[in-house]
Structure formats: structure tokens, C-alpha cells
Length: 278
Ligand SMILES: NC(=O)c1ccc[n+]([C@@H]2O[C@H](COP(=O)([O-])OP(=O)(O)OC[C@H]3O[C@@H](n4cnc5c(N)ncnc54)[C@H](O)[C@@H]3O)[C@@H](O)[C@H]2O)c1
Image (cartoon, rainbow, N blue to C red; front, side):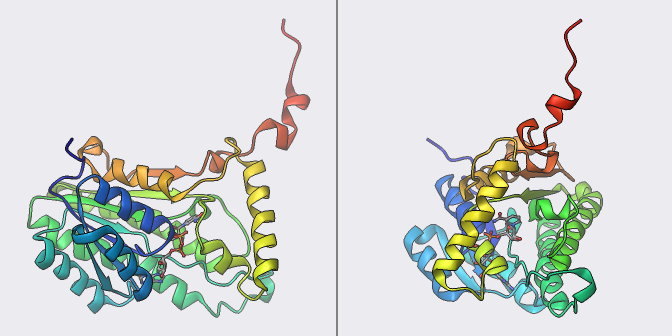
């Protein structure tokens, strides 16, 4: 059976872990050649070794324009082209107690990776794709970029900007046969939460804290289940493949419905607003 991405070459930034690694695995299963781009060299190399000759790892900091340009060149020279660019690398930055106490100490770093990294990856992929028959660019935002929330100030702002930038880019590159779409994950089980909420805790306290947060999020989401990297990978496959050939400037939350709100059992509205049938 032929895979849906047979003959295509993809780059996945932040491809060594979590959501990115899930996308790499599914793309390879569907026949793509994939360059895993990440700052975590041991993890990236071990994933490339596990998946074999359809993958290559290139140590890349997405916030560095020179490295992103070299990444696109590497994919083209190694695998003969670039058809799909997934700008997924991201960090949460530190969680801060309140806006009034905020020093924005991690602003530059968060924006550099989460926003500039996406902008550089989009531009450089589009430069190649526009001269080579088009392609698909998939940018990873967050439901935190859609629904206002406190604590991760720079993160949420960066993720909102990713959505706006991606839709704007789609306007310009559409005539070149390039589609730009956005995935907004919510509560996908990856190491990012440990880094965001509990970096300074013992492993046991960290595990307890994460369990509590996950239970809180699950209870408030319409589907009431935990998301896993495979869920976001399936959305990426849709945007990467020709199934979405008429879809651009699109924003797809992959969040069990969380961005729409909570079920009636949580917010209690059902009892308040229900009326006897007339
Ligand atoms: N997990 C979730 O629930 C969730 C929710 C919303 C958005 N996201 C977004 O999904 C994306 C992937 O996150 P994840 O949950 O898989 O986290 P993760 O921490 O498991 O993976 C992020 C990867 O990005 C890499 N990375 C960090 N800085 C980099 C840089 N400068 N250059 C290249 N690579 C870099 C890390 O080494 C890591 O491999 C992020 O953009 C994140 O904001 C995740």
C-alpha cells in the first residue's frame, strides 16, 4: 500500500520530542523522508537512528536565521527537495504568578523560538517551495494563542502571533501553490508541561502536580480524555497531504474541544437554562 506522503520531503522542527516526534513517526510511516531539526542532539539522533534511512537529524536552533536557512538547504541536498515544513519547535517559558510582578525576563527567548522561529521557517521554506512547484507549511500554535489566559504571558502572546502571521503569510504565498495552516494543540501528553509548571520540584512532586493539572484540564474539556502526540500528528498529516489541497490559512485546534468551552456538567448551565418542553 502506498503511503499518503510517498515522494514528499518534510522538515519537522522540535522533531526530537513530544508532538514533533509524533509527526515525524507518522510522516515516515506514510512514506515521507523527514529531517528532524532540534536543539536536543542526543534525542534527535536517537529518533533518527530508530526510524532509519528515511530520516536525518540536523541540530538546529530555530531562533537563528543562519541555522534555519542551512536546515532548508540540508533537506534539499539530502533528500532532493522540500514539500512540507512543520514549524513546531516551541518552549513555554517560565510560569509567572501575576502580571503586576512580571519582569518579562524570558520574553526574548520565548518570542525568538516560538514566533521568530516560525517566521524564519515559513519564509525559508516558502523561498524554496515558490521556485519548486509549491508545498505545505504547517505552523504549531496553541489553544493558549486563541483563548486568553494568565501566567504564560510571553508564550500566549507568541502563539497568538503565530496564528496571525500564518494567515497573513498564506495570503502572499498562495499564488505560488503554497498552503500555510495552523494546528493549535491543547493538553497533549508531552514533556512540555513538566518544563512549564514544575521544573523546580522534585520528580515525585512534579509528577503529582502534572497529574493534578491534567485531571483539571480533562474534566473541563468536552471530550474528557487526554490527548496524545498521535492526535496532533493526524492533523499534520491532513495538512501535509493532498487531502487538504484546497485548504489554507486554516486554524485547527486539536484539543478535545477545550477551546469551545466546558461541558454542562462543569459549568452548571444546563440546570439554569433548561425549560420544560412545551
Ligand atoms: N503539549 C501540549 O499540550 C501543547 C499545547 C499547546 C501547544 N503546544 C506546542 O506544541 C509544540 C511542541 O511541544 P511539545 O508539547 O511536543 O513539547 P516538547 O518539549 O516535548 O517538544 C519541544 C521540542 O522543541 C525543541 N526545541 C526547543 N527549543 C528549540 C529551538 N530553539 N530550536 C529547535 N528546537 C527546539 C525541544 O528540544 C523539544 O524537542 C510547541 O510549539 C508547543 O508550544 C503543545
